Length: 101
Image (cartoon, rainbow, N blue to C red; front, side):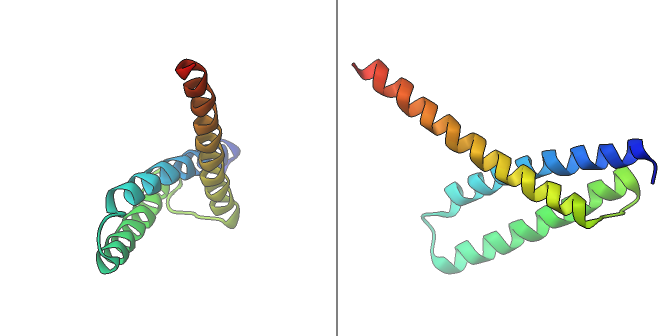
């Protein structure tokens, strides 16, 4: 695999990790009021769909070659999305408190 294709795969994995975090958050918010059986079923289907989407898109980008470091970047993107969302909530809370005064 040449370097351009590998860098594109790195970038895609990182961005997909961010996408995965925000869709996981959306999934959680949509199913939190349902029964435990429905929560597990929908979450299982969601994880299968996300994994298949990742493999399909990686197949389109680099013919389905998935290395461990692509998965590590996917996890880094997920953690980046979590940290960004946490920081954004903190900033919104501070601005909201200033506006209430």
